[in-house]
Amino acid sequence: MSNGYEGAAALAARFPAGFTWGAATSSYQVEGATDADGRGKSIWDSFVNEPGRVVDGSNGDTAIDSYRNIAGDVAAIKSLGLSSYRFSLSWPRICPDGDGRVNPAGLRYYSDLVDALLAEDITPWITLYHWDLPQALEDKGGWPVRDTALRFADFALIAHTALGDRVKHWITVNEPWCAAFLGYASGEHAPGRREPAASIAAAHHLMLGHGLAARAIKHADPEATVSIGINFYPIHAATDDPGDLDAARRVDGVQNRWFTDAALRGAYPEDVVEDFKAVTDFDFIRDGDLETIHAPIDILSVNYYSRFTVTGNGGSASASAAPTGAGSAWPANEHIGFVPAGLPVTDMGWEIEPAGLTEVLTRLHRTYPEVRLAVTENGAAFPDKLDEGRVRDPERQDYVARHLAACADALDAGVPLVGYFAWSLADNFEWAWGYTKRFGLVYVDFETGERTVKDSGRWYGDLVRRARSNREAE
Ligand code: FCB
Image (cartoon, rainbow, N blue to C red; front, side):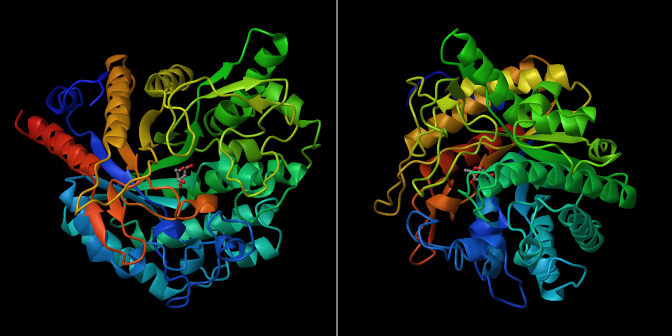
């Protein structure tokens, strides 16, 4: 095992009492059962059927069958000793047409899942939007259209009314950057559109939806913990060349400042507004929108995987696009290239930089001291093999351990970090990469559905048990 972090006992001792220990998934990636019990279609159901969109030609029709296997998921979470589970709601399972018509069977699945978790003393953290927009709303224009944000607020309230008596942790939108710019600019994700101006409108309406949903939930339950999930990256300029420094400012602006400044400051960063003027006149922003978006939140959810090194001189248009012929995810910034810094990479080609997580967390705390932070996704894909009932994945264990040490460093520096969720509980459908990338702590045989806790999962479970029992003994 490589070094750079302490052993499990010492690492566990660095986390405070009451720290949330979890793992995460999302609906389309795990549920399957895409036409069961009145579920409507999502944009992912349509997208995966278009040739060439997913590298292995696969889809989420079966995924890892979580819809039909609540017991299996809860048993896996329990076997890891986790205190929390983060999962998302499939909007079209609950509202098949994207409007106020509710499918009771859809709500029942999530209600049963919540009950099964609570029966094992596992706290549910719900994400309302993890990218599976009802196709019916995409047919009316999707996220570039304002009405989608209003329908999202309705859906949030429907979900909260059904589950809010038992669920206190709500994440409105997961990674609006991906939903807007991979969905509507590069087209790597559903709905696969390549419309730079529309992607910026989509980004705004995702934030408007966040603000409306956050306010609706807080109004219904002032005790609820409301959050938004954003993917952050330290951005480095490739050289001191002014073009590279400007590229770093631009990518940092869109990736790290655009969404958080809107949510926590009630204003989009002025330099990024200037950059985006090359492609949009912002006619979709109405008076009062930023005020709505600036809804009080309790926790900022941080998804962290990697860092970027950028140049203003072109090159690779994306840090990690799947080889599916996608366009640029960077409207008004198409001249920017992403270059490798020579660090070790995961199976996604993502550079491994644990110190970057400390950097992201301390910067966020410095900039937005009023909000607590949680790491709601962190993890790595590696090409795992099941070998006589065992999956030896020392690289993933090393990745998680070093990122947890980075979290502990942030705690030492005074960052109010309240939890850590590994991505992912189990191997699943990795979007445009299909089933070719494995992120789970639990290995899934995609043919039979059989699950095997990986070595990294055992290690994480051991660490979590130590951390939780250390503190209970105090
Ligand atoms: C994040 C997504 C999650 C998963 C991981 C690897 O961007 O939120 O669904 O795909 O990346």
